[in-house]
Amino acid sequence: MSSKTDNTLLLPGARGWELWVGAPEKGFTCQLRSDVNKASELDKITSQRLVMGFPIREVLAVPFHVQTSDETMFADLAEMHLEKSNIRPEEGAGVLSDVFVANLGAADAQLLSVILSAPESDTMPAASPTGFDVSARFFPFEANSVTLWRELGRWGFAVTGSSAGQLSYFQSLSNLSLGEDAIRDVKLALMQLSMQGVNLQVNRVVLWLDGDELDPSEADVQTFRDHMEVEVTAVKKPNPSMPAELSALVPANVRAERRKQADKLKLNTCMGIAAILLIAAIAYFAYGFFTLKSDIADQQKVLEDVKMRHAGVDFFKSDWEQLAPVVDSKRWPLLLLERCTKLIPTGKDVRFNIFDANRDQITIRGEAAELPLANDFAEKLEKSLSDYDWAIPSPSPKAKTTRWEFTYVGTLKGDTQ
Image (cartoon, rainbow, N blue to C red; front, side):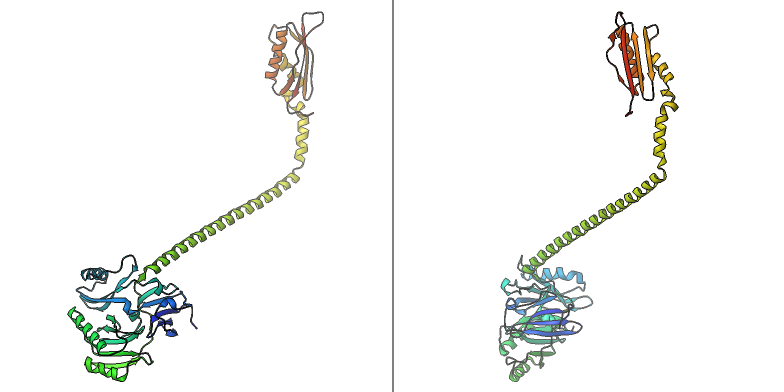
């Protein structure tokens, strides 16, 4: 059974696409061998940790030599070399080119640029892979060798230099079987590499077998020996493994889907953060509310306790208010009489016939020689003794005289009795 940390490799096999599951540290096991030539025709492929290797027939390999070992310059140098060779990846189709180190010297390097043909949408798997590379980079190669294997029914080969496993070149052949045509194409490719300054020392030719009826016969192997003039061996094709570092290749449709998924993840993340903040705010205010409610309840208990311990204060206050006319000098009857008489202008004929003052009321019955004097006195009462509500009816003429009688009653403000 596969674990959650295992990778699934989607690779072109001898007849059709294959699925390999595992991890670099424990190896990979084949889970599916098919006869389909399009990855889109495979069913139930998981997209989790799925890595796809493009067939070498869909990739152009361009080897070249540079006079520097500064790896930070390799990408720019590869782009310049492709421009010079009039080779351009299809625009708007994603990331279709990358560059790999075939051999790194002290002051120079042998590099390999790869250019992927933009894959048709109906050839890609339904599940979007998380990474891509060239199929040849998933297999181990011997140093200074030419290795041939079948891929989706056609033969292809790879060339390695002195660094074991590092590809110097690869190419898909048009041949469905090994013969003199395939030998001629391999020898021609080696000659072209030498003319391009790629120094190779091929010591061995390796034929990978798949264990079926399409494997080359012993006669085919002997033909290779006769023409290549180097050791030729036929061995079982090794199991694939993950490249140490996957390529930067990403087709446009996968790139767009990744961007869509990234936007969706970003949106979900923002919504999640907003939900967390909302829940935190609700929790904060709820905590504050219940804390405040608890504090109010505690204070209410304290207040009730104070009221119980000082219940006599209310009775004392009531008694004190009843004694106010006695203890408050401003409300003594004689002082009230003095305050009222001082309101009469000197020399004016205004007199009191009756002056009565109790705890909360003043009653003045008097007379004045003229009506204006009575009214003027009433106005002064309201202003000077403003702590009373005054009932001031209009003065009336005194019978059989020219004088005016008045009755003014003041009630202490705030008194309910």
